[in-house]
Image (spheres, rainbow, N blue to C red):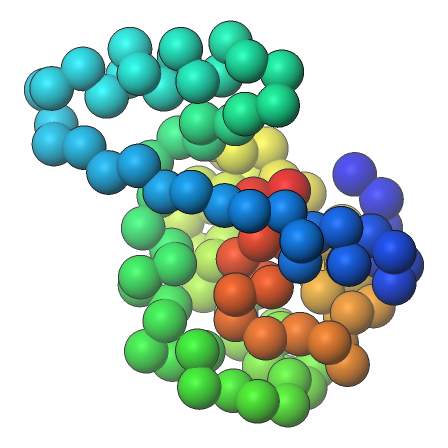
Length: 115
């Protein structure tokens, strides 16, 4: 994971399609997740509801500031889920978002987290 996202990397992230598959607990979702993860071009990350949870607070922001990014990071890392389960380093993610601040919007931030 690079600490600074360059223009080409951001363009690649923006062009990468994302598909969300939802499932009901105890219906084989873990087995399905493992099957997806077996493919080299597919990632089935652990469950997390950060996209929906943070949408009301951050989706409307048109021009991101350093304060917006830091507020987002504080909420994302309150329970250490991203650090402990997804193994996403807080400092690196913060640097990535701040280095891309001119292009940031909520969908791009979500994609960066998934990358």
